[in-house]
Each structure stands twice: as structure tokens, then as C-alpha cells.
Length: 573
Image (cartoon, rainbow, N blue to C red):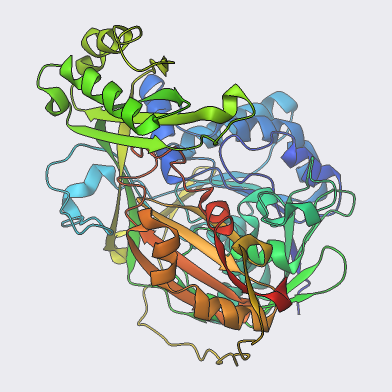
């Protein structure tokens, strides 16, 4: 049996810690260096970059990191797999080759394409919005990229590639593929592949697995500069999540659970190579900074693949006015009425108007700053000229003619894109793998559905005794994030008794009571990791780029919920 493969992460998003690659390569033993640079919003950012420069469209920070570590990776036999290619994997590979030549190095560099389906949208059928059911119609599409799996990466590694650059692969594919290559897994080794998928999902977001953004952050020692995570993936797909011993932060059952809940939907986690059953995951601690993941069951992947489209949107701007002291509602009404009275057509001047009064003022305030509420007026329109002099002049002229204590106002407008998730027939996709001068086509996995045998989890009894109203976060952790126009909110506790209470308490109805803005909500139970996952449909509108929420990526949603007061058994407090 082959030894476990030690796979490190060095990036959770485009813009993550530049020094992370060097830290992971130089501060301890690893076999593979991976990093995730892509999100739905990133594809729009890279579109703008390539629009300015046709040779761009990839993550330039990855190229800089390769300059730092390439020589050491080649010397130690460390493979590199990254989705930093974005919209231009070939251009990214060329940039890395240029760096290698300047360093006097000769790595074997491969790149994987096939995800860009923009040139053949007309052959894909009607791309209906996965969340809203709307047909795409004649909307202007800026980017269209299918989520590829890992078998193209496996082919590149099989042919001796030292560095593999991809476009829009799934976040976990860059971890699954090196494990499949190393352990020689077959395409239908569902459980092993699912185990690697889970490990990849845990480490793909960098330091979120080692204490970053952790609900109980006070329990993490020295969180100033936490190390990035490592997955030791065994031949059966089980894994140990850990970090370099010299790095700070921590790997605990809690930090791993939190990351498992990040940006997921149902208990069946879909991927182009396998469906991982998150309701089968078992976590056990193996000493300091080591958490073992076992028991993961896998099923065949769906016959459809997700496609991320970015559409041309419009122009938006949010103007904030600060209201101080008494009568904030009346002050807000006066400002709003005065502003739209000065615009031709009033509120109908813009395609979309959203008005939100955020009450953060305190009664009998101790400081000027604690007497403030915020009025947010968010505007959208296809005509960018409407955000010019007519609007800014109307705001400026209210400065001495509106509510007492007037201040705030002018903001810059910006064009935004619309996120459009859809499904396409996976048989229409191929992975185009370029190694040197050779290009090979690798087909996706296309098999009939299979069903895994997931063991049931026994529930503990809900404890009796007195209860006390207190913040939910005293007992429960949470993590949240964006899923296109939707948001996900994962909530977990630490004991079986706490889970029995949480499962009974936090129904969909209760969540909507605590979060009136939630809209349509689905709940999924994961008793095996004492967790609930909620999907809040439509909370982010047409995606992160177009959202006018103060937190457009829903990163703070979990902490908002944890601040809510509920009745908690005193035994837990």
C-alpha cells in the first residue's frame, strides 16, 4: 500500500498571503503544493483584466510565488497543482515558463483547458438559471466556464508534469487529482475519491482550517499569522488534516467542522468526479493539530456539470447618510423625500431603488459615535449617466436643506456583473491537457447513478432542566458564505446532547424568526458532525458583484445568528 500523500494548500483566494507558498515549501515536508485562486467573482475580475490585456486573465500572484519556490520544489520533488490559470491557463503556463527560464530551471509544465464554453454557448441548449429558473435568453454573456473535475490533472501528472495549471476546476479537484494519481485510483473508487474530495474541501480555503475566521477564535493560540493546512491522504481516501509543527494557529475538530460547513448545500456534495456524502463523515482527534477524517461514502457524480456565467449587468452605487440622535426614522424620510423630489421622475428615475435604515444608535449615548444610525440608499440603472451631475448635485444641495446633523453622502458608482449558474450535459465537456507540445483530450466521468450505504446516526435525548435566554453563540459555532445569489449558513455544536437540542430548536421557522430577511430557507441535517446547514435562497440577489448588502458575500451571517438570544439549557451554559 502506498504511503499517505502530504498535500499542502497555499492560497484560499486571489489575493491571499503571498508568502504562503514559501512557508509551506520551506517549513516542513510536503509532497504536493496546491492553491485555490478562483471564485465566481474572481472570474469577473479576471475578465476585466483580460479585457485590458489579452495576455492576462490569470492570477499573477501565483507566478510570483512560483518564482519564490520553484527551485526548491524541483529539488525536493514537490508537485504543484493550481487553478490559477483562470480565464487563460495557457498564458499562465507561459508566464511560469518565463520565470523558470530566468531562474535557469526546466520544469515540465502542463496546463488544462476545456472549461471555457463561451465560444459554443449555442450548442449547450437553454442555460436556465439554477436558482431562479429563468431562461438565459439573449442576455450578454461575458464569461462562461464549466467546473471541471480532476482527471485532466491526473493525466498531466501521469505524463510527468511538475507544475499543473488549470482554469475553472472545482476547488477540491486540485487536491483529489494528486491523490488519485499517487494512489492509482480507478474512476469508480467512489469512497476513496469522496474521502479526498472532503479533504480537499477542508484545506481549499487556506487558514480557515487552522483557526482563521473561527467562531471560537479565542481558543486558537497565536492567531496573528496562522499556518496553512495540510491533508495527509491515505490509499483508502481517509485523511489527516494538520499543519507544519512550527506554524501557529490550530487544527481541531472544531476548525475542521467549521470548514466542512463552508459554502455547501445538501448532504450530497456534488463534484464532476464523485458525489461525497457529507452525512457519512467521521472526525476524530489524533493529538495536537491532527484531525482524522474517515468513513466518507461516495456515489457516482451527476451527469450534468455546473457552469458559471457572468453576464453584463448595469451600474450601481450605494450612498450612506449618517443620522445622529433623535428621530432617525423621520430624518430618513425627510432625506429620501428631498432627494427623489429633486430627480426627474422621482424614484422611477432609476431601474432599482433600495432603502435601508440601519439602527445602531444607543439611547443616552456616551459618545457622538454611539448616537449614529446609517441610512443606505442603493441605486441601479443600465444608464451610467444617471449617476452623474443630476444625482450628485441633488445630494450636495441637500447638505444645508435637510435633516439636522446632516453628513455623509457621495459615493462612487461602478459597473457590475450578474452571476448566472446553470447546468450543462457533461458529455459535451472534455479536458484538454497540454504537456510540452502534446495535447491530449480526457473525457469526464459518465456513469449511471449509484447509491451509498450511509449508516444512521443515533440521536441523544434533549436534556431537561431549567433554561436561560442567552446568545446562541455561547454554545454554537457558525460559518457562512456566498453560493452565487444564495447564502449558506452552517451551525455546529460539540456534544450529542447539544446537537439534539439544536436540531429541535433551530427549525427553518425559528431561523426565519431570528433572521427576518432570510427569505426562502432549506435546512439539511448532518448529525454525524453535530451540524445543521441552511441555504438562504436569493439573499444575495444576482450574486456578489451585484449585491447591495453591506456584507455582499454573507461572511458575517453566522456571527449575526450567534448574537441572537434564544432559550438555552442552563446545563450547557
